[in-house]
Length: 284
Image 1 (cartoon, rainbow, N blue to C red):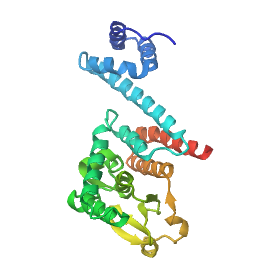
Image 2 (cartoon, rainbow, N blue to C red; image 1 turned 180 degrees about the horizontal axis):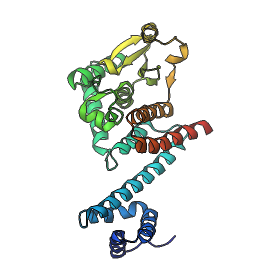
Image 3 (cartoon, helix red, strand yellow; image 1 turned 120 degrees about the vertical axis):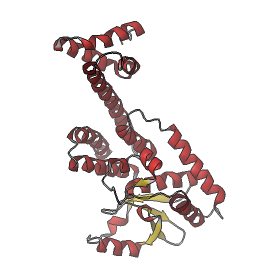
């Protein structure tokens, strides 16, 4: 493996991006892309030093390097027999905010789960689940973003936590991540058009609707909900959705948002990541 350039060599290499010869610039860009994440600090450092055309080139390189890094992370995650949902949704959040540090959001999840555990009247599943719903949807004020349902932010968990707004699947994922920390018997439930959380209680299976303030529905109520929504009911709609299926659905939702809003470049890149997740899943 070739040795990395020194800091001085890296700075000199980045400066060559300001060359007027397109062929020379193309060669420099290829070399910088080959250096991957190692080049990022030097590209960022040079960003405000030279003119607008130089900054456009830097932005393009930074974007491509970060996407390639994200693609590599999705490749690694997707190769697992079952990807970790939390890691997957924070990788997806990096698609929207490439410099995102998920650590503060993971700490927030830990702290919220600890608060729920400390204030639950019992360690039994239902009281803890009820306390989770009350704390998240009433005390903290999380709710469905009905006014801006097709805002891409609704699919990025960091933005959902920041704004306390989301769509059914992103709010359900938030519940799933908290419930996992609390040891609750929950799974995803990929109902058509409206993702929910499937909860296996000692006496029955219920479904938590995170988009509507955490209301609980029985299987029969889910059946009526789907019929009212225009779907011919099938029992398979109520089956559990695993992490891969959930992550892929979350990504496809976002892909649909980009496509309907004409953001073709974002849609094309995200399609690559979606295919990675789905293709690896089909090979298992």
